Length: 245
Ligand code: UDP
Image 1: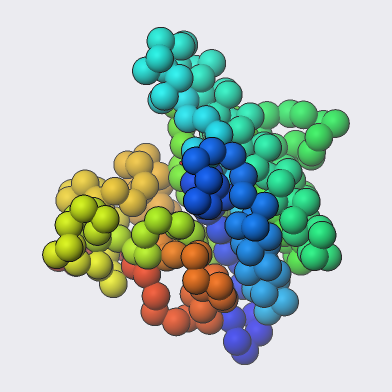
Image 2 (image 1 turned 90 degrees about the horizontal axis):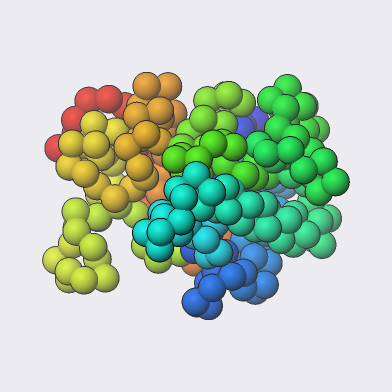
């Protein structure tokens, strides 16, 4: 660990929406360029970075199933969407000379490596950014759950949940309610019992049971990933079992 980084190995969760920017759909090249730049800043602090990408900017299984599709098929489409986002991020990172590997939970060897835990750890030790794509490889799960699962597997110290529409966890939706209050600290039990919209309950439980802290923050402000890594208190930190409120 370097003197200036609080963590040695982190999981960065990027929702599909974070890659969409202001566009209604798909990937905004400027946004992805900005995120890649922020990731490079922490790689330069010698932090080992694994990234989990979502696909809400392309497709969500739930939407497909509400339109009458078979849920599992719709979920596989969502997992394939995460692979598109992963390749776009890999491209943006390699353009600025950050060595990157994509590993997928569904095999597509012509496109990327399959997920192999020990190999992923080896890449991280060599300071390569590893992007985990295709979620857990299973329908009915989310990429938040993937972040919790992979963080436990690779023994990451923290999950950094980067948001583009909110800068932490609030007691009400801040875009609808002016009096909404931002939490600085919460426990996973608070999140579960208050039904706070941080991540789905499967992901929260996995983080709680495996003692993995989570920091929710905004990536809109340039340099925020580095600020979090250096221990600056921005956003909301969630950890532990016991209720804080
Ligand atoms: N998905 C899945 N299994 C997983 C991860 C993701 O089936 O392990 C599918 C699911 O349909 C989900 C979509 O992929 O709606 C995109 O993931 P998510 O909604 O987590 O993306 P985000 O909200 O982070 O953009």
